Length: 396
Image (cartoon, rainbow, N blue to C red; front, side, top):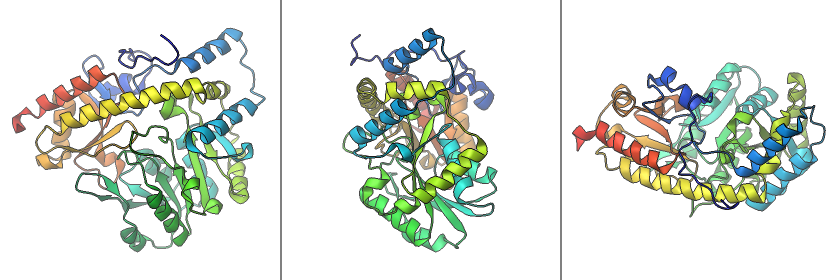
């Protein structure tokens, strides 16, 4: 296999490797791992890129696991990636490393808001946002996304303006959007920035899926949307979703404003946070030409998976899947079947033996929906479609 040929069709055995998605499926859904298809937790059923496997092997064989003392290669790889892949020029001093992006969100909440303050999200949205907001004794403010006839999510600023009471201090944007698969346009991002400015909100833009964008769409990092809000903007990024290394728990908060940097740095100091040395070795191996080649091949493969899955589930009467513009997470609407969430779950988990994330966990607008992870070998996507069609065959 040459460096630009990757086998995403390989069935990699994740069971028995402490995989939450596979080994936790029976505990969470009552589906034994040997019987089920795990399509819930957002990581991939592919091996990590060869470049990072080689780097980890080199580190292991060195036998050297000391405190990590030089961040230049690590920072340079992030700067290179953002410039080459996203056209965004950043500086080393803007980069703060966290233990993943949920940790970064929590640090932002602690650094920029106080207990009792409101934190705005656009629902339905990644469920960890609400969990962390509530755990920090802040109020979760859910602004419902509008839904186009094809199931695509849309911003609804006029409605959201009427919901603001003056208590909110922060807005968390999911860009691209999980679970809807939307890649927001420049015009929509400018609308978000204007909304944040109108209501005096710190804007935390979680862009963890920014490398997973399908042909015909383009992700714009928030600072390049010409929004002029650097004084209230924090951008979050990570290698974890792009390269299937979520277990390394490494993310970045990229902050250009000096006052916001200082507040974030104080919170990191309070928590005594320092990054894991292995993640600092791994990131340069991922943010590299070799990593880019793997990622391009992976995105093309995921695009094929999403087209196959969408065609298959929409053949079930009453089932609709929002068109995916990015991510590997499919948002499927079962409301047209007339079934409630319990019956939908009974058919998908009980009959089809598929573990998918329940829609209500994502907040307002999630009822009668499920989120399916499509980052798996295509043979398993075909199997999932067959199982789902059989589970709803009485609707045919």
